Image (cartoon, rainbow, N blue to C red; front, top):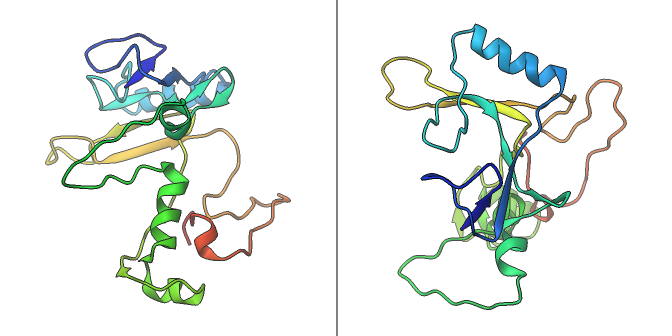
Length: 188
């Protein structure tokens, strides 16, 4: 299913089309973030997607030969057509295309869909909300001893951005005014 460049193990594949590489996270800010997590009493982990999910580490990324390798690029654009049949449909178009396809199909907040000319078929507010791409480093922790697994995720990205599409103070980026269904919302 994947090729993890950090090495194949019981949790990671070694011969699949989706290539994962460990993020560099070698900036002084990332180092300070990981050190601060340890000083606060949180453990380091070699791989947040491996055997020890709880803790802080550099995040993996789907980048191969300097280019983002999406699941579509890894699986669908390989020149081979495969069919699978089952009782359920799994929609896996990526972080942006999956919510967009749902919205264009009429699944989201019904009032918002009507505003942009899409006929709602299922009122499900929140489709595509709060989209965040993987940051450079981060971790998973339990918020209290009552939970048996991590229930809070930290992302660390050492640049100034806002996840709602606006620019930081002094920034020059502009917000898109296109219809909601032509892009995935990144929060309100």
